[in-house]
Length: 74
Ligand SMILES: [Zn+2]
Image (cartoon, rainbow, N blue to C red; front, side, top):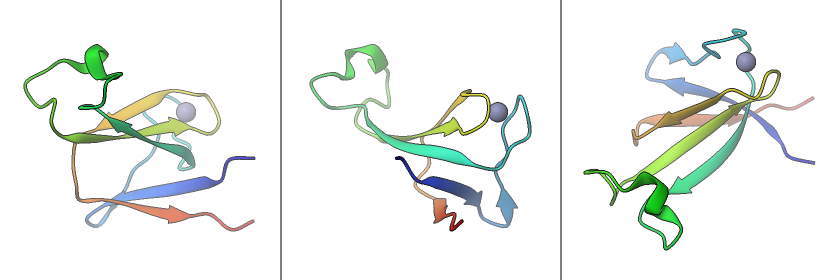
Protein backbone atom coordinates (compact mmCIF):
# COMPACT_ATOMS: atom_id res chain seq x y z
CA UNK A 1 0.00 0.00 0.00
CA UNK A 2 1.25 3.46 -0.86
CA UNK A 3 2.32 5.74 1.93
CA UNK A 4 0.62 9.01 2.61
CA UNK A 5 2.66 12.18 2.71
CA UNK A 6 2.04 15.76 3.67
CA UNK A 7 3.72 18.45 1.64
CA UNK A 8 5.03 21.86 2.59
CA UNK A 9 6.41 24.78 0.67
CA UNK A 10 8.41 27.02 2.94
CA UNK A 11 6.15 27.80 5.89
CA UNK A 12 2.98 26.70 4.14
CA UNK A 13 1.36 23.30 4.24
CA UNK A 14 -0.12 22.35 0.92
CA UNK A 15 -3.74 21.30 0.99
CA UNK A 16 -5.96 19.92 -1.74
CA UNK A 17 -7.66 22.58 -3.83
CA UNK A 18 -10.84 20.52 -3.93
CA UNK A 19 -11.39 18.90 -0.54
CA UNK A 20 -8.71 20.59 1.60
CA UNK A 21 -7.20 17.29 2.66
CA UNK A 22 -3.54 17.56 3.60
CA UNK A 23 -2.62 14.01 2.71
CA UNK A 24 -1.32 12.99 -0.65
CA UNK A 25 0.24 10.17 -2.51
CA UNK A 26 3.50 11.39 -3.96
CA UNK A 27 4.52 10.50 -7.44
CA UNK A 28 7.61 11.96 -9.00
CA UNK A 29 6.94 12.81 -12.60
CA UNK A 30 10.02 12.89 -14.76
CA UNK A 31 9.19 15.22 -17.57
CA UNK A 32 12.29 14.46 -19.58
CA UNK A 33 11.83 10.71 -19.62
CA UNK A 34 10.88 8.84 -22.75
CA UNK A 35 7.30 8.86 -21.55
CA UNK A 36 7.33 12.59 -21.09
CA UNK A 37 5.82 13.63 -24.39
CA UNK A 38 2.65 14.45 -22.52
CA UNK A 39 4.55 17.27 -20.84
CA UNK A 40 6.41 18.56 -23.84
CA UNK A 41 6.73 22.08 -22.54
CA UNK A 42 9.46 24.67 -22.19
CA UNK A 43 10.39 23.34 -18.78
CA UNK A 44 10.55 19.76 -20.02
CA UNK A 45 13.96 19.21 -18.48
CA UNK A 46 12.61 19.87 -15.00
CA UNK A 47 11.31 17.20 -12.70
CA UNK A 48 7.79 17.74 -11.50
CA UNK A 49 6.35 16.53 -8.24
CA UNK A 50 2.88 15.08 -8.58
CA UNK A 51 0.77 15.10 -5.43
CA UNK A 52 -2.35 12.99 -5.69
CA UNK A 53 -4.95 13.82 -3.06
CA UNK A 54 -5.43 10.85 -0.78
CA UNK A 55 -9.11 11.58 -0.32
CA UNK A 56 -10.47 12.77 -3.66
CA UNK A 57 -7.71 11.94 -6.13
CA UNK A 58 -7.18 15.43 -7.47
CA UNK A 59 -3.69 15.73 -8.95
CA UNK A 60 -1.56 18.72 -8.08
CA UNK A 61 1.53 19.11 -10.21
CA UNK A 62 4.42 21.22 -9.03
CA UNK A 63 7.62 22.13 -10.77
CA UNK A 64 9.36 23.42 -7.73
CA UNK A 65 12.39 21.96 -6.03
CA UNK A 66 11.48 23.58 -2.72
CA UNK A 67 8.60 21.21 -2.06
CA UNK A 68 9.20 19.19 1.09
CA UNK A 69 7.49 15.86 1.58
CA UNK A 70 6.79 14.43 5.01
CA UNK A 71 5.80 10.86 5.66
CA UNK A 72 2.58 10.47 7.61
CA UNK A 73 2.86 7.86 10.31
CA UNK A 74 -0.38 6.25 11.34
ZN1 LIG B 1 -8.80 16.31 -2.37
